[in-house]
Amino acid sequence: MASGHTWADGNWPVYVPRMCWSVMSLGVSIREGESQDSLLRRFQRMVQMSGVLREAKAHRHFLSKGETARLKAKKSARRKQKQSVRS
Image (cartoon, rainbow, N blue to C red; front, side, top):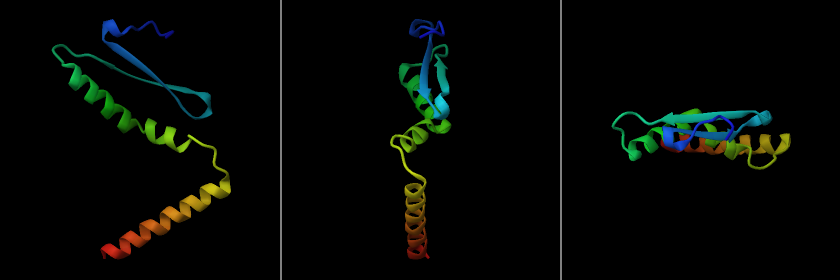
């Protein structure tokens, strides 16, 4: 890790690859009197809010434009079906 942070000083850097080969870094610093569990929960919430996992999952495999359009139409049809059942 080139940032110079260590886990011992309370900064836990996490590097997540993003689109276009850029890198996004998320990190949490331990607060005074904070337990490891609450630190982990805070980090997980930060990752969830940033959408990093959703984006990584979406770009796990290459999808052509046609495949992307088919998936989008399929999801839309499923969503409309659910909405009509609920009504």
